[in-house]
Length: 165
Length: 152
Image (cartoon, rainbow over all chains, first blue to last red; front, side, top):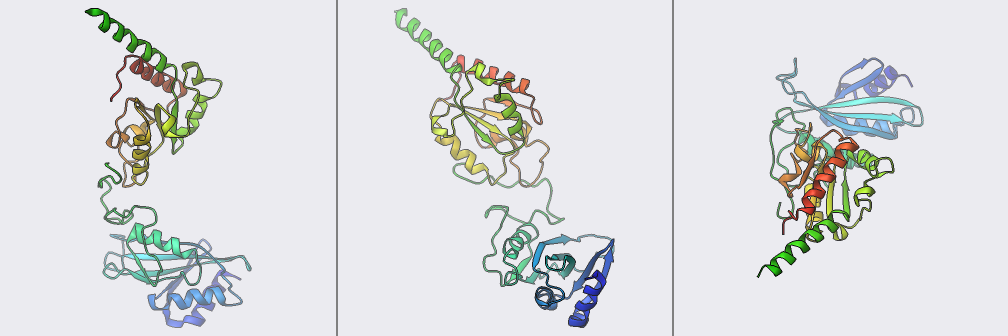
């Protein structure tokens, strides 16, 4: 299925909950409102024409002090979907506010979202509502802060962990 | 009067001489430096000439801990435990700049030098160090062992 047709189908299903769409160099993206993201992902997975059966990646971007988004939502959570059946791709984005970094979980749709969401929580401090086990994935429990946030000081050192260290 | 002293010091020298040619190493290999470690261990450079040819994959049977590669904060407790499990006398070699100082990983994840965790006897800098540097470091360690300069 053509990328613009995928976006049109998403718009037809979600209506105004698709905030904007664009494609850059053939990568088609839909920005979805937070309350519509579970619907959008479920539709993408289950619709016979879309059949996005694979969550390629789930990650986030920190747009702190990004030109044009100084006042806007600070984070984007990004979903990269791929359909093995139809060999097509799409990218969904959700904007996340700094004050309430909370997104509904996708663990019920793709089990891999479990670890990917734990990584996003670890690195960016974005919580996923309904996640069964939202612990840090890469860093250790004693680590304070979220290192991939743009305001995490690059020179900050944290205490060593472990027995008698 | 001097007989006992004379004998003891000579015994120390003999033990040091024996120890320096029977280095059982524990390779704690975490990153790319491991390739250079393997190159050093293989026949072309052949650390077996220095009596360090047999790695032991249990710290309880090893004399020298070779820390080869970047140590992250999450790995630090593991390294500390491995060191604690080794029997005395024991020595530690920091292999490559990551273990010496953190190298170019000046970031949130990497330990800035393993001497913040365990004592180090010989530092071998390089990214990765050439086998010649490794052998140089190994010979310096041998000198240290022969001189009986280990900690108890």
